[in-house]
Length: 426
Image (cartoon, rainbow, N blue to C red; front, side, top):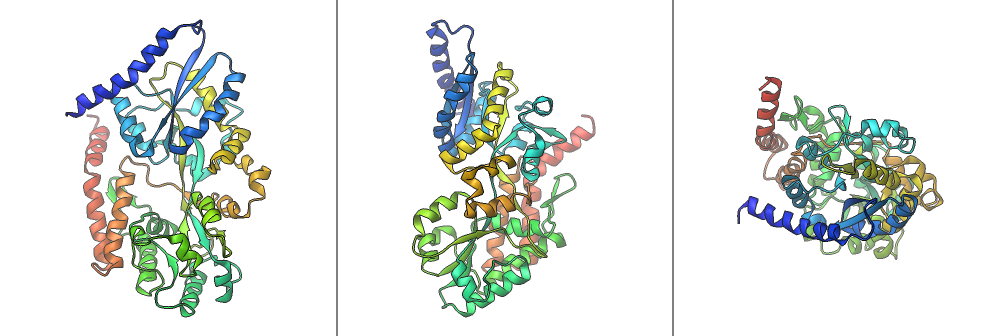
């Protein structure tokens, strides 16, 4: 089946229920209906927030469509091609550059500046920045995601670190002391070799930007990124991290509880997992150590975007504002565990007293976005591919980084062509 035929089928599937709804009538002529697409668990839970919005806005109805994360990207692209995008959607913030490049998104600067309910200063700067491209804002952060250290405080204390390490020197020393107390099959830290966030974060902690010349070329051989990458590879070469992928670990929580792993770098969804699965030993979270003190981490999460083709932009913006209200964000956190994007929401009792979430609150003041190019996800996946070669001794650090630059340069070939044409006025 051709892509166009597949698009037509999907558009028809979307259009039929809309037509049926339109024919339903029933005195709804004065009611604006906005369509909101949300992914995964968020799409299920956000239904609980809609009645309050509709109570406050009797002239607006919200249709929520839940979309699996695994299908979301293709469905959004298909909807764009078929002119069937929703009014509002949840969008992973690393997808914002792609849909902005397509011209699918409505800039929000004027609406956000005129709104008293979405003050930019109340958002974490690094998270807000993920939505800003060429000086214009294309989404409002909905919930945030970053990576911190999950660790066994009892094991670290026994190794001489009653407090978690705050810089690389302390971190490396703590890991070496932990390893000295461990058996051959036990390791101070787990860094699955098929996960890209860890090497990317370490490279960004040392000032690496991943790309250069306006996102035209890879910049992984740059000394700044190389310093972080060296640190990452050294952890494996010293035997401080096992050379295993995520699929080679049957149950990381069990290994953590058994003391076979003392630390791992992961995200906020693990608070719930650890609470349920790691019940027999103490565990805690801490901001990531950096080269010379507390380090940066990734600015991740999901944003709320308004599609340019929406016929109900004002109503859709009202819904975005409502979902962005601090109280609504706290309620959403209570329903999902997703961390709020608004600083003021973190002062609620639900979060202020959560000592394991506190590390994320601290870390969110030091987060940086991935390069804001449509190819970002493909690029970071290349990092772990080449990183794994270095970790497993199949390439030197220099060879791996040179190969990484070459891989990324190929991914950016079309981007270079487009930028050159744009700047040449063609």
